Length: 203
Image (cartoon, rainbow, N blue to C red; front, side, top):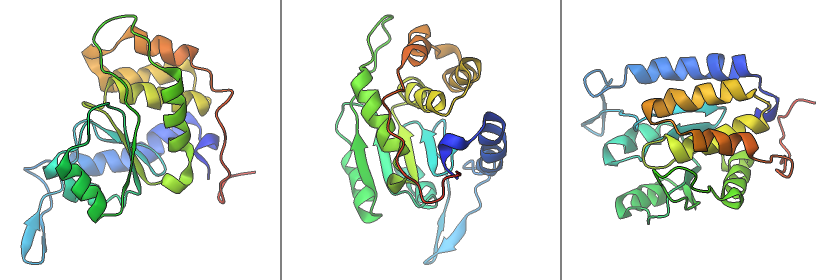
């Protein structure tokens, strides 16, 4: 099933709930530590981690303690939305697990009315929609604004109504929600976004 044909109730409730409930039990205190080669590993998700859709996840910046958890996702790609170089420890993790890094450098700014480059979001969205890159993780620093904008544009491409898109954005951004981000998603033009062919898409 292609993500384009997903409807809001299924995408957000049916798909997100099972993983969310599982992640809820993966805190450092409750993590099911299983012995691997004589060692115990705790599966700790990154900040603001959640499932977006089949093969698509979102989070804040993953750190070393999160690597065992990320490994369980079987990621093929990471969509990184910050302009700063990726840390050496993260690069080492990607190389060890055959994960491809896509970097789309969006400046993080607290200033209002700062323009978000449409072209960068456009390219990032096409990378997200390319199922050859799945499973993938989208992240920025805290998984709120830049990640929220990209996921919001994905939802718009999926034909979600704006109220549902903004609902999801605020759920992650909380009291840091920005009107400028929501305005960007509202005005973002999805007409030129290519729908890549999928072997399991519904006709």
